[in-house]
View (cartoon, rainbow, N blue to C red):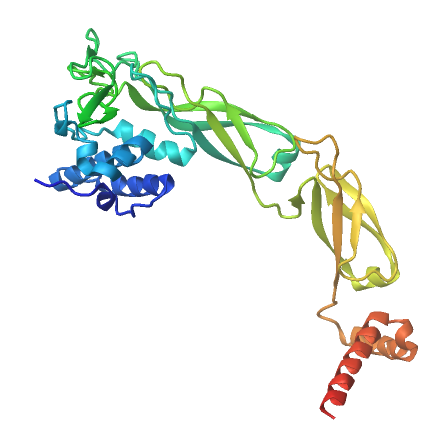
Length: 383
């Protein structure tokens, strides 16, 4: 029976990048995984088919052989290797490492012929307040990850038994097939590159050697972190396979929006509403900072949008010894809900302002002069 094209199985073009291949495999394997389709033999067959296609196309050498010779270039049954080139039973641990490891930014690193793998790096998104980001804090987090099975000490074999050396690859984890003058080395189809097979699997981890656990970690957040900063916790990622080194955990910082302040680099920004009277006559206001309130002097005639800088009231980042500033942007509020008496006072005030001309409203009159000049120019153009 003819085999389907691996590119067709993953629904990708032949010039697809390695990233396209990973994304396609992630999508297809999650769709057809047996855990999501219990009792569905067709879904299980498609899952194995996707796994086999991914194993070939993600490896540059195997992909090159497949592109040049087709299935004959990667199928041991077509050459001296013998045996069946099927994907075998793809377990959830493989999917967890290939798919979720990519999401977390780590992924498994291949070991040698002894089937030892480093655990995946994991990422934890931590949301903190602006105050905690500026002054630092300590946070306890709970992280799900694959850890070594205590029942079998990570071997995957039932207690009292041991994994056996694979009779196909003799513990190498790889087999070599010959097609004429062309030789290709690939993962052993019987042990899937492990070099060992488990005849009596551990009932706790079902032969995986790892189980999913929740662990609580205390994360010390240094003062001055910002959104996008990462804290690396060495060895706190996924446990390795067959005694492999554990991966790392990266804690990604996300600073929540603040009711009063926004941050840019080392500076803080806030808007300060002021009354029409204070803007006109000047005065002093109490404005907030992260370390308490301070007095801000407003000069007479202050306009909306005026920015006042309070030096040293910002943030000192983790990568700098300089503390930033707090920049206060004033916004003049227009009086609302006026009484009849207040309206009469303002009307009388407006008359005195009109008599003063440009002396009291230079921006308004300057803008009016520009508008008149604009319309005069249009009139001359059409005349």
